[in-house]
Length: 146
Image (cartoon, rainbow, N blue to C red; front, side, top):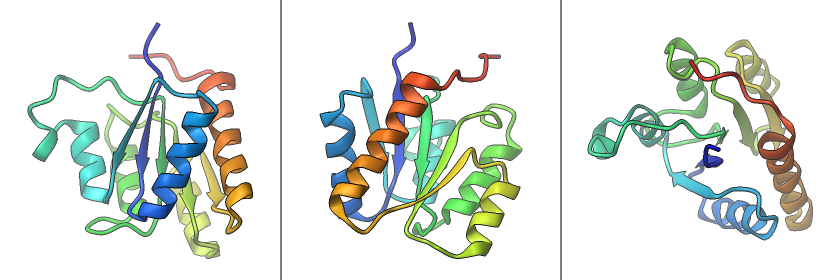
């Protein structure tokens, strides 16, 4: 059985800490990897740049992707993931503070699997993250490996 890994792409240290705390408290993932900007996300997934020396990727079970990231936005990351055969079916959840309709529309046009607004309240935020984890790690059937 493959290790279930989450890739968290988050530049806000507070949101990162809350997300990690909620997921670990719920014991939902064997591993949670964190990158803090869009370029790092692509480098991690494609084993380029600072991640070039790592062994060939075993893709994460799900990517939790913020939109407002340095270097490359989450929407640019999503576009690149969908354009590559290696990651075109990788589950990607947009987890963002944005309530802009155009961000939601562009996310779905680029085949995001889900668009979730981060609640402002800590308790709601933690509950939302746990529900996402339960669904994507325990309930959802991932696409078959190719």
